[in-house]
Image: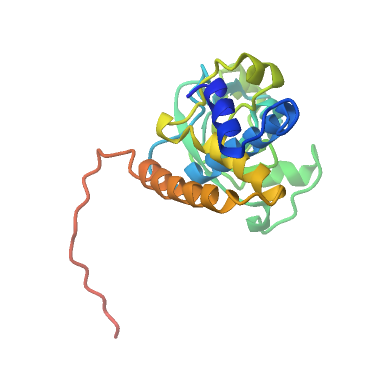
Length: 244
């Protein structure tokens, strides 16, 4: 379905037109609202496959040179990061090591302010063959930090994340040619969802039946995205538990 198809379906379900009933501006808000709802359903149900807006032309990852003495590396807010997937670091430009997550609560000693002797001592407690990272909002804090010599050798960080879908603009809805960036079998949710919002807000009788359709869509969406990765070899094996 295109946005034009979705818009037409909304009019059919609600019995309201876009000029004097269910206004285009309000439809746009609700379509974007339900797009985010659909994405959270996908994220909650997906298996090893990685969902991303099919309209994107790049993968959600970034490789950047490390900076001598710098601990934090941020992702632009425009990327709309939902979650961080993994971090890899090389201190010599050749050998990459997967960094494992740590929270500042797990660090048993004082961290100190930037540039302090205490913070330098802190770096010495971490290994450059087993680096750690902490997540602060849209930033990754690296332990240990790179030295100038390592930066000169090509030290880098690679960050992979999960991001939100791109919202539609008013011109997108007017033109109507865009196809939603998730599986086409569930595009109708962007028509039924906004229609429910309108009918429920206006106490229209069809709200209940529209909601039932949405529930059916959600069940099937969860099954679909929960079984994307078929190439898995699952095996049972015995396990002896000793309770003595």
